[in-house]
Every structure is written in C-alpha cells, then in structure tokens.
Length: 238
Image (cartoon, rainbow, N blue to C red; front, side, top):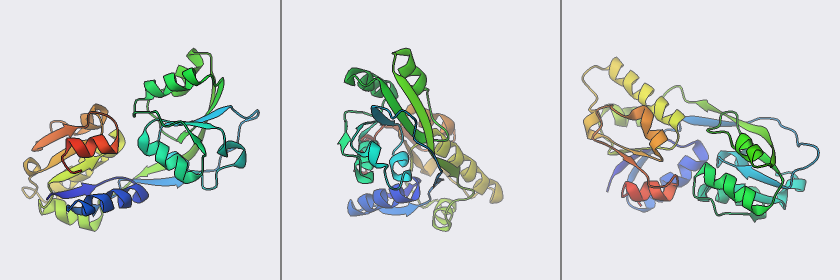
C-alpha cells in the first residue's frame, strides 16, 4: 500500500482521501486551493442551459437559483457532473470526458442557443469564444475565487521533509506549480534533507505535469483522461 498526499480543495480532498484509505493507503491532506464563493447575478434574459468546466463551481453556488435548477446542465467531466447533481441541478447532461473541446461540441449538438458559463475567476481555454464561433450566445459569471495555499499542512510538511510519501496527486496546473514552489521552499530551508527521487507525482493531464517536470522526481505519471478515475488508474491507487 502507498503513502499518498492529496492536494485538492478541502471538500474534494476529504472525499478522495476517504476513498484512498478505504483502498488501504495511508493518506495525508494538504489542500493547495481554497475555494471562496463570490456574489454574482443572473443574466437577463435567462439562458437555455448552463455549463461548468470546474467541479468547484456547482458547490460554490450554495442554493441553486430555482430558475436554473431544471435547465440542461453541461459539465466537462464525471466529477463535475456529480458536483452539479449534488448541488441540485436536475437535468445534467453527463457525457463529458474532461475535454473542454468535447464539451463545446456537446453544447452545440444539443441545440441550445444560449448558455450560462458558471466558473471560477481563472479558467483555462476560452469556451465562451469557442461557443460564440459556433453561433451560440454564451455569458460567463464568476461564482468563486480559488486562493493558493501559502504553506503545506503541518502533516504534509512533516511527511515531505521526512521523505515519507510515495505519491503526490496533482489536479491543476496552478496547484502543480504551487506544489513545486512550496516543496522547493522546504528544501531551501533544510538543504540536503529532501529526496525528490523517492517521490512519484500523479498528474491529471499533461498541462498539470508541465510545471513539475524536471524536478528530479522518481517519476511523473499522467492520466490518460482528465478524470479522477483515470488518475487513480494511472497511479495504480484505485
């Protein structure tokens, strides 16, 4: 069994940690993003559908506006679909595989002519522009901000400086970059202590792996698809 560091925001981290512990692994948690909901307003007129490219966005809504609850919802992947259902959306079109281009194609194929994109303050790609190019009106509303952690959790810091972990799971380019910054800061504070060659990094995608390449790690493993299930399969932690 492996010793694993989970870096997802708190709610997702707790859920994934429980899954890994149930599989027999030893887990410590150090969320590298804090999700903070922000005030937002509905567009007028209302759209025909909603869209999510982040599993954090549905949870950040709190109480889903009644006027949106029964509209079609297009999530980018299975995790985002599950988050949308948990938030109270009733018509979740869960065909996404984690690919944003595939999501845009799915929205276009649905016949929806106007879409509300609910997102964080920072997004990858330009789904609004991609939809616009297909003749679909898309409006974006920022519903949360994601603040990077300033330090590792005490448990994670101790495990990393003690070279007592086998895997670190990374889910976004931002958190991968912050992991490397914080890890290198630990090494700078204690020269000669860290052994990155004992540590394997599991990355959700090639984009996630990019900021941590060439760090002297034992290995960097990339999931075949941008889903949690694919990452756990690639790292043999499922």
